[in-house]
Length: 260
Image (cartoon, rainbow, N blue to C red; front, side):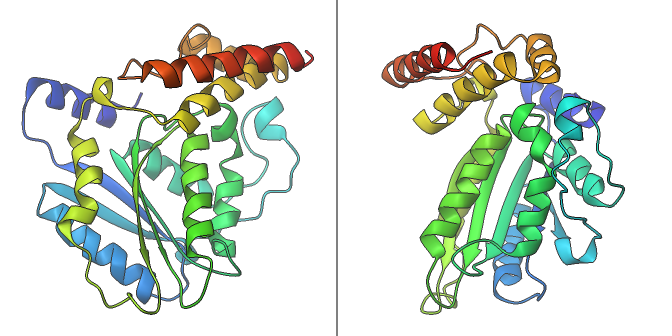
């Protein structure tokens, strides 16, 4: 855990004032509709003691993943670029805004390239429990599928989805309201033990656990170090009993059918 994150957690526990930090990812090459929504959210967050840094992906040199699996099997990456700078910013932040315009029914190619580079986070989650606000815009179709994909990325990162903000050509002029950001703001200030993970998040945890112990040695070592092997989730929180039973049962079933 970074010193910054440790310090912020200590200040929250003690009830002291602390300027929360959010990293907002803008994956559009143009600073127009998607960027404008982020800027509106940034202003609202600023009024709630939250500092937001907007990262424009097109300002960074990010090479495509080459699928070598070096990060999974040996750790680290054979590529040398600025993707790691963004990942470090995300890891040191208290929350994340993940956004994209809709390109061909999905996220922009630049964002997909960056997400691909976070492959190790899917296996060895490093930003688990961070609250995330998802934003997408479109002049046509694909809004729902894009928001759904981004939510899936958030879950597989081990992060915590706090809601979606979407705009179409008919609603793009609708200003962002504080109520649309409120759940994100609440989770930024919330202690992790009060989180309520979704069924999808709980199931994903079980899937990642099984795969970690069955397939890749480096993953197994990481999960053992985190002491997640006998846990229902990454950290102690408010888990619905029925959701827990369903997720754990699925994990036991998967453990039996996946060959070591």
